[in-house]
Image (cartoon, rainbow, N blue to C red; front, side, top):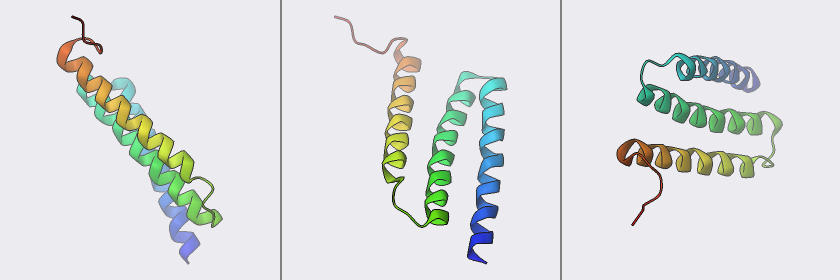
Length: 91
């Protein structure tokens, strides 16, 4: 029963990733695309965590940490780019 629930959650997460990817490609504004990319990052973290539960292992914790760091750094850099127009301060 527990495996059936996890497989159902994996299927729903897969559909959510596909829908978010569509929003990234056809998003009307840049901010919609940024939010969709952040959502994809969170969904990937959830997907890998569910895979860890299915396989009953802790082998993918490094993958989760790396995806979280990349999603955070990407969000911060895009926010800086939108705010200032460039990523680096110039004197």
